[in-house]
Image (tube, rainbow, N blue to C red; front, side, top):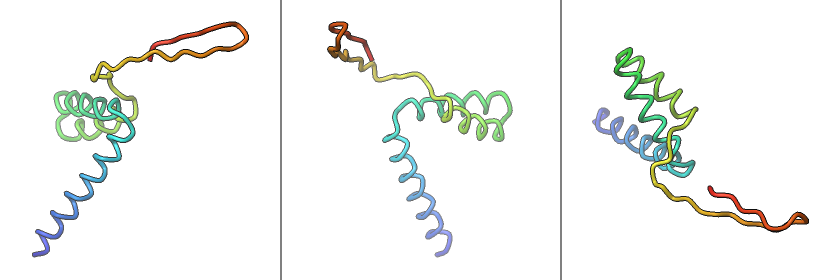
Length: 83
C-alpha cells in the first residue's frame, strides 16, 4: 500500500511539474529533452540527469513554428519586428 501511495505522489508531482514547464514555454521542454538524450549518449544515466538540468536552463529550439509580427508607433514612425 505504501508503494502504491508513493507512486501516486510521484506521478502527481511529475504531472504538476510538467504543467509548470509547459506554462513556461516549449523551449524549456525541448531543451531538457535534447539535453537528456545527449547526456545519456555521452555519459549514461548521470549524464542524462545533468543534460536535463542544463538543457532546461539553456533552452531548446522552438518547434511550433508560430511567428507573428509586432508593430508599434513612436516619434520615429512605424516599427515592426517578427517574433
